[in-house]
Length: 517
Image (tube, rainbow, N blue to C red; front, top):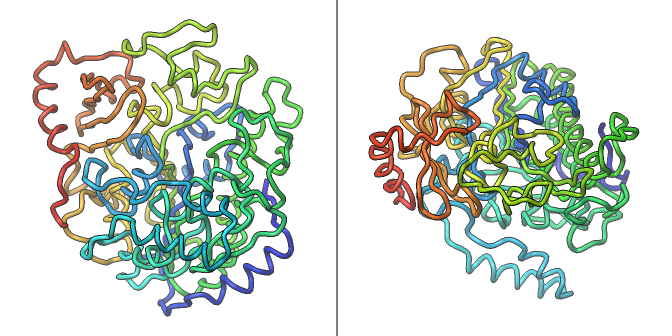
């Protein structure tokens, strides 16, 4: 269900976004295609129809999988900022400096002070000046595309998080952008303003400083929070951008807010209006997933209409695994139960035996696909992410891959697709050979994932399927996710030699130095 913003907002975007930074670039070809990356927010693989979702249909995303390749052994991070840092830098999250250079919520704090425009700008500049500086020789994702003579743009929840600004976005290689600077503001879907190429853009009908962020349980009436829905603005902007650059090859990155909560929609999708088995907040969440799917459908339809379908490679993924931004019919927020170890009946689960499942506590959608844990956890349910790639004429339709890969592999993959050299001394390995059905010349021995507050802190996953996971108390568990993807059986005692081999690797990578900086 696509919802469109006010006429004022559409007109404003039409007048501003099309004329911005029209840097010359040659047209795309089947061999050097446009590249679009759609990055969902907290979408577990189990929320997609082709992965078994029973309540929410996702025909447009499923069509990407049917016409391309779907990865099953692909990883993000338990948290938002480290996942995006890894994507943008091509480095794993064990590296020093992973995550964010500033805390979130700074712009909301400034807005609450009711400063004059000059005072506000001065205060924001002070925050920027006190941020961790960007190393001179760091290279970022969009710079790789620019190096290949691509125009670059992003729309949505901008950049690495938790806070960004114009000079930083330009430094990262973006020719054009529109969206939220502050990821905490992005927890609301009705922003009073957004940012476009350094300009603060007022949004019609939205007045709340917190961008209309609603309660965690999602009980507010549909339409609460504001008038103009951010995803509608982003979709309108992206379609206009694609039209404006149809004769120039481009790299378009869409880090959407959907379906991150708290849940908020302007109208329930017709599929869920009369569902008596779903709570109001579950209906809102399901509608948000449908809106994400419809966004994919609208982008694909635009590519078809402009004749760009065969000249565009489309990637679809998510930053983290599944999270439950809705309460079930028992009034339980499954994510709260996961963090506390409490089941729906109030009993406390010994989570260290690792037998607890979110679905056992009324997780209606089973968005983690039966895996252990949710976002915030380095168990599979928190870090296993969808990755789907469609590139007509290059990727065999309906194929799957279990190759071990992660967000930090996207940078070298983009470099190889766009026929340019990837930056040196990065952690990623291109998975283009896998997409093309070829044997990879080199593969990861392991990937490293760090950062979580709750049970299951950090993990090392090997090519053979071994997963060493460190708990918050510092102890280790061992699983083989190729044989036991649900992580039911801790094999540490049965395989002490594997633990002995992997722990030194884990400890070496945790908080490790960058070799290129």
